[in-house]
Image 1: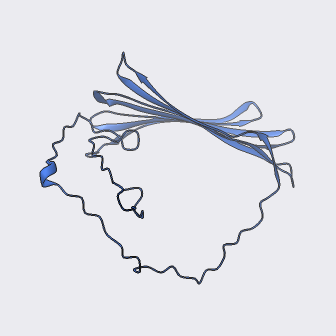
Image 2 (image 1 turned 90 degrees about the vertical axis):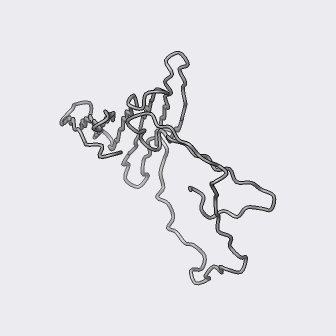
Length: 191
């Protein structure tokens, strides 16, 4: 459970959801799964903490941190997440865009940034249709010196194995100076 240290107020309720899938957090099983739950034979036991059972130590004092490095935001950051449901095909797709922006350190003029595009999709009746694609970009530079790394990874699966296809390209300016591609199969071993 994600929130394992929560105090419920009197009269509040807890909802427990049980599912055979948790896409996109957990990769789907190779075949559709059914489940039977006998609620009359099931129970959820939660611990009860007495109010006097725990006393926080006072040995640490107030938190301290160093002052941040002065910087200038050149490109604003962005985070978007959008779910798309195609009712004709039965496919659900989750699109995530995360751009950390571009920042310039005032002390030395170094500029750096990163971004990511992620697409996860699955068909409602075919767990083997699950697919993820992630593209990431890292950039760093100063004045006329610019470098960038672009990566792309695609993950799919069969009943027997996961298939990973990946590519990495490194750039100096706009000139690609390095490229490598991978294609690997990894046994599922019951996953």
